[in-house]
Image 1 (cartoon, helix red, strand yellow):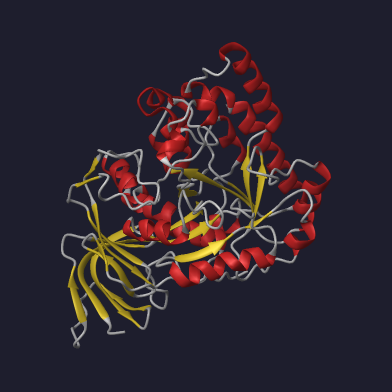
Image 2: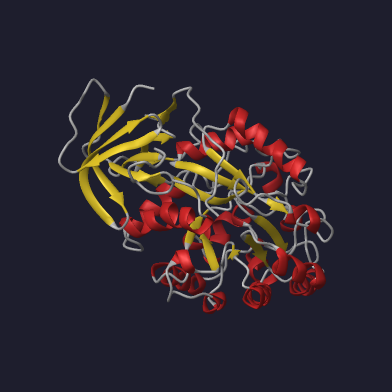
Length: 445
């Protein structure tokens, strides 16, 4: 590959913003300078007026392949990801068949190797009866183990206390959990079904999948992890009640219990069910304004560690069903960075903290090898952002296979200019280059 020289960029990295040049060579960041780098017959990109940030790392997506490819597949959704500045994704195991054996997991890696322009890793799934397979997972090339400690598809709900105890005591890998208490949700659903029958409205979703359901399950997971010193990562925190479970007193690298908050829980709240209805139905539910405010405060004060999407596409036909038949999940990976830039511009979060939570922190939390930072010798996963270009989300530029977004019609005040994956320009000026740079992640564990 011909070296690429990015000049005059506003580089946002490791808590600082400065104007500088960056040289990409052989897939790596060769040189970073605020004094200028001379052009030695390189391909030159003049990035004056543009931000240069590390590629976003999304630690929780559902790309639906295999088995649910009428909704999405690894090819379509990874393209949407890089168009949104996401250079790396970690995908969940609740596909069909579930990724609950090493052979099934490797089949997903093989698909990604053939089609993904983004870097990739896949979680090993757990059930009540596959613990031996889980414990044989290789921590150096698999991002983690996923436990659904709440309602899930098929048989992926792990609710046997003895199995959970064994998993937390024996698993040496990072365990990522979906925490909602099944019994609480069932009891709430029974009450609302008796009252409203089939006419339950989407606005009741945060009452059915309640704060209490989240807290009971998250507390249980934290108690188990504390008992066994397990490396626990709780996904998509959605309530003010759960924040007390986490600490901001030690550096992220030293934390044994970490957390993630999603773009939709930072963006939407109860009043949005009135206009968006089932389109923002997700698990755990988008809750109330006071929860959203508490999540922002906890994020900015380092109680919450990572910003992700839980990108979970369904067809519009499926989402337009009545509440009880409408599946939970929102497609977000294409617009997560732009939405967070909007939050930054409104004063919710500094652009430096945004980069920390979307790029640096996932790399540190999962111990990803040489990614997530703009550092010499690291893989050149980079994004150029035009922070002053309007971009309106329309049917014509939504890249998800499902073809819709809760942001449709919204005009962002920034646009993704160019995305590099392993030094390869895979997306530029609202078009794909035809090059594919994605690699399987490795981990320093």
